[in-house]
Length: 510
Picture (cartoon, rainbow, N blue to C red):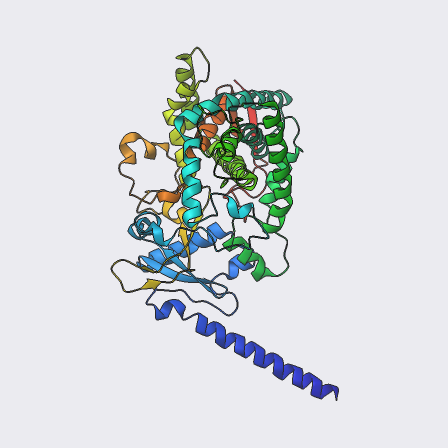
């Protein structure tokens, strides 16, 4: 009896596996049938075996695919993550068409998430699409003008004092510093203050709640099922499980802060105040009394909307700026002549302003800005830029139609390290971004903040934060790599480009 059961089970299992194999083989003809070049997908994995096994991050995987299709000499190709077909544009002209000219066909970053699971995640500007995106972006655009950046500058400047003090203590101790941790604590303090109006003192307390929740969101989910884990990482921006925990924390923080401000009529020059203006009045306008409830807004911007935008402001400013400054300091440690040039520029500019960092002085730090731009070329904040086709699209010059729901992976890392566009791409060379040389950079080959209508709104704030943070350190301290830093760098398997592990540097008072 038992042998018969074993035989029956074997037959059933064989039938199931055979059916799955045949089904996957049929799915793997998706791009081929549309005349789109593809690679060699394999059963269950598609083209993403290394991704599923955790051998590569999504950005490294996208870079590898970019190089393969580039070597084939084709303007685009198709890949499979498990059984899902994904378009990989290679030619800058096609990327421009997708991100800008025919943006209406690619208005979404991601596939839709269940609203009941992540209602805050679904409402932030990065994730919404269509008319909801247009309406929200229109409301938020005034919050990132040069005038609003200047308004938040003094708050940013206050936090650099804590950064300088911490650097001084480390220098006096003679011990190496994990600069990645130091800068994450600095950006947490900056964004918590500018975004939420709160003092979380991460520079003094490395276990602050704000910092812990920020890190939690970017921690990959622990899921034993490799394929499910990879699909979550590939198709979503952050960890859904961890996000839900932190969402509750940030909703409570925002709600309590708004209630306190409205009760006590507190006006503060920060991002949250502008969000309160949108909630109560429907517009960002300093001439309007935000606490005058005699006239109401249209009610389309509620507490969840405020929380969503404050949270994305925090996440973008916390992780990407800290990472950009970390990579910049790593390169400056390896290129002391460039570090000295940044320091010299800072000294010359600040001397014009009586030794003080002002908003106007920050704007004059052109070489420092070039260093940051070159850093983001070599280490783009998001190595792969996702889009989802939302309206039937025909690839220009072909009859190939892309169906709604099809994902698109644009490899920013691939473009940024393509020798056709950036000769000797592994060389760290800020001179690429002088006013004269910028004119030679081909359109849509440099995408640190995306491009087109969905280009990151917060790029000015991120650049401002990075410039001020770097100069506050470099004007008084010399940085060298500590032997504990492992080279070549190993990248973390996360969506945001960052180093896997600690980054140790020596800090010496000048």
